[in-house]
Amino acid sequence: MRLPNPMSAAALAAKIGALVLGDETRMIYGVNEIHKVEPGDLTFVDVEKYFRTSLESDASVILLNKEVPYPANKTLLVVDEPFRCYNDLIYQHRPNNRIHERIDPTAIIGDRTVIEPGVTIGPGVVIGEDGHIQANCYISAQTQIGDRVIIDAGTCIGTNGFYFKDHGTHREKWHSGGNVMIGDDVFIGSLCTINRGISGSTRIGKGTKLDSQVHLGHGVEIGEHCLIAGQSGIGGKTIIGDRVRIMGQVGITNNLVIEDDVTILAGTGVMNNLEAGKTYFGAPAAEARQRYREIVALRNLTR
Image (cartoon, rainbow, N blue to C red; front, side, top):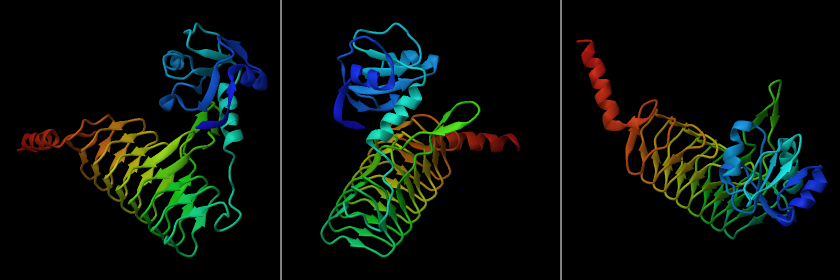
């Protein structure tokens, strides 16, 4: 998430009561989870085993709860509750834009796009030209939709990410301050659920087609011209390449990379990254030819 008004590490430290280690004039241009940080971003860490990952990331400023050695290109803000400070910062810049009208007056809808009865469109939504949004869809704040996009009835776009901070005795919700970005010529079937990102965007590339009852978790990125069949679910922050084909009832866990031109056959459970151009089957997923040989070998054992 980019900040509309960048701030210095010193300014944020004064606001949250943090101890500054390093260059206090270092500027913060964005806020992101560790998986997606870029130079100029602020991130947080409050579990010691992840300190090194954060210190070696592209983040420029890091919220954490312990004084530790740090490289010269990082500024640390030491505070008791890094997560709370991070979550509050997201909320301050992307508050919950509650919807009070069926179509918010700030929404922009392109020429010749059809909006059927019962569609709810939130603040700051932009929908391109020649689209068709069928009845009873929900499109949350800040969603960006390209031209010639078809969204079938009952689909929800931009719902909260299923992401909670575990405090041991309870779980605290991460504020979903991101959005959803949908490219041109995308088709989304009925009753799909697409979560918005926590601090960035959930993305669907141009020409991609989703069948009914597909779920995309927070921060998922789908490439161009992919096909995803019904009852498939993709965990948060997983990245799918271009021209990937995902058959029905496939489950893909979070934080994976599925490379270009992969085919995942129906009923597969994906728990590891998948290499480009191959076909996968089974749970856990393996190359289809290997998995079929294993099935035949098991059958032969009973003869």
